[in-house]
Structure formats: structure tokens, C-alpha cells
Length: 330
Image (tube, one colour):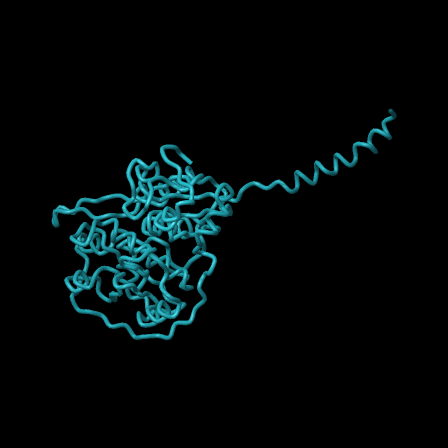
């Protein structure tokens, strides 16, 4: 075969190879989204910026704790009763999104506008109402709900009120009444997904169980679930991996803080990989632990295609036909 004829026959193969090379893409690593305020702010940052006219300090602790002491200028809109997430009592699912109209009214009554920079202040110490992690998860859920409702610049105060007070910063017992606004925003209808959606994505997208490992593996049964174990193919990324505990010797207690951003990023990238565009679906027992993980993945790390299944294992295991995996990873 002469050289010219050989080149003619090889030309289509060469062309296909070049097309394949051009179509292959390297995954884009996640990077933090552009925002007017960091997703997690320090107590020092808050003290330095507390006079910012666009800053709204949103204390979501219970009213009694707020009354006993709060950061000056902060308003109190606690998670109970049903401001930032609906608690259905004996009914289920337990933690669902508020109705849009009610949520927008809550946001407006808190004086929050689309241009506000909202700092969410959590309960970060143990109390009779529950361990500190419950306070942090509820605060994270408030932050996620605000972002869902169209508020772009939401932050969480590292260490919450307990860290602020332990550092000897100014506190107040004078309640703050916000000036109500009329809030009109656009909810992110793609952020929260249904059980049917998750069923269709098993084995196709990255599912992430954010509960402790013993619940994931089915060594213990989540009290909110009908059966122990996890959704098939789900990876485990426990929310507590992202937390630290600091001793407050004066108060003879500890308060929770976030791990530093580098550690948060390393943990997530190691478990989930560096494709920032891959679809990730987070869930937990009822929608609590999934809240801080969703917040960190989207707002701190910058994964761009994260979904939240807030029906979680409570809804999933109530269906006897829904498969559950025990005693193995994925």
C-alpha cells in the first residue's frame, strides 16, 4: 500500500482522535462562590464590621437565651416555632421547608432584604433543649433556607454567641425590634429534591449520607428511621467531621466551632473528589445534619450542583420497597 493511500485511510481515524481529545475535559475543582461576605465569619470580623448598615445579625437561639444575653444589635428569630424549617411534630417528615409566603413574611419581618448581609448566630453549647450540635444544625438550616429564598450573602458566626461572650466582647440584654420590610425574592426550586428524584439518581449521582458512621453502616438505627442502614451507593461524610470543640473554662463548658477552611476543603475533596460540577445529593435522618454539610459544600467549598433531600432516611425507610444497605461502604 502506497504512502498516499495509507494517509487517506488513516485520516478519518486521526480526525476522530482529535475530536475525542478536544471533547475530553478535566474536572473543574470547586472554588468558593463570589459573595460580599465570607460564608463563615469570625468574632473578630464581626466586631470590626458590626456597624455595617447592611449587616443583619440573626440570632436563632431560643428566646430565653437571647433575653439573657445577645450580641448588641442582633435580632431574635428562633428556629422554633417553624420559622426557618417546619417541624411537623408527630407527623412526618419532620424538617421541611416553610411555605414560600410564610417564609417571605418571616424574612421581611426580620428586616432582611435582598441586599442584606446576614450573619446567623447559633447556640453552640449543650443545654437542656439539646446538645450543641442541634443548635448548630438548626442555625445551618436557617442559613440554607435564607439562601434558598434568594438571600445571596449569608454567613455563620464561628462559635456562635458562646464564643463571642467567652472572649469578653460586648453583650446586651436589650431586645432589638427590626424595621419590617416587604421581601420578594425567587426561591431556588432546584435545591431541594424529592424521594422519586433520589430513586432515579441511585447509581448515577453521588449520594452523601451525613450521619455518623454507625448510623450509616446500620450498626445503630436512627430513631427517626424505620430501618437501619443507608441508601445504596451513598458515601458517608458525617457532619461532625467538620466541627471542633473549644473549652470555655470560665463557664465550665465547651462551645462548638467550625474547623478551618483548609481542613473543611480537604475532608470534602477527599471523600467527594475534585469535580465541582458533579451532582451531589446530601441527606441524613430528617434533614438536620445534611444542613451544615450542604452549606459547607456549596458556600465554603463551591460545589455547584448540590441537591438536598430533606425527607432523608425518615421518608426513605418508611417505604418498605425502598432499598437499604447495611454493614458495607456504598
